Image (cartoon, rainbow, N blue to C red; front, side):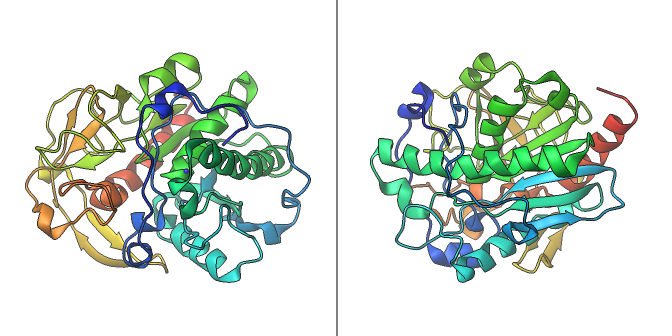
Length: 350
């Protein structure tokens, strides 16, 4: 949410994505995110093109080494914020880059207690790309990923210095995380630095895990080097274009950190937080909702709230599809979990 290889077979089976409304982008955290497309077998990056930003320059990073006293490094990939009539974001577009920074700010407090913050600007696929034919859409994502790969290589070589790494992203950003794992983390030395990957709202398919053994789904609250992912919906929703009927995907319950169908009570929810583009919490609700994992689709069912109060906001999603609220419904639990996995990693629990 990336290579020159043909699109993976799992992706071909999914429907084309529909554009997000600009109004959603301004109103909600996840609406600052791109329409997700479930990942199947992310291909390695092609050779970096000559037009890639120079990531030796701090100006090509939205965040560059913020929080020097933190024990780990966060490499965060921004979701789709480019609503213009173009295929990929122009980094000369200051208005969209401001939205880029705003979307990142909405996630900041999840990670800033645990990690020094890095987030590259990259020529992400614009929302228009998701309405294009498959080959053109994949070309736009491939183009975006080349920037991400170049930025990550620079981060490893010049900034990370062997420190623990947290990867994170939502929707297009989560897709980019999977592709980074596929390309860079087959290397044992790099993989040994990985605290966790928070790839929320983007399915970690069974095919993806089979094809890339370094992509390991989380199994509990404190395992490390793993992928934390889920997507939310109301009971009764049977299929969405994000997690269609028949999909086999790994996920974890963000309240009880189980991978089976054991339900989590609302009392386990430390607080839903609804943030704005400054990163401020506009509303916080402890014990907001419970959660129960549904397999094999790998979705989290959220009972006890009214779908009418939390509309999908994304064209093509049915009522009860809570994708745009994935982070917000479980904000405090995710924040605590980042701290927990980081502490476990630092204590040598790998």
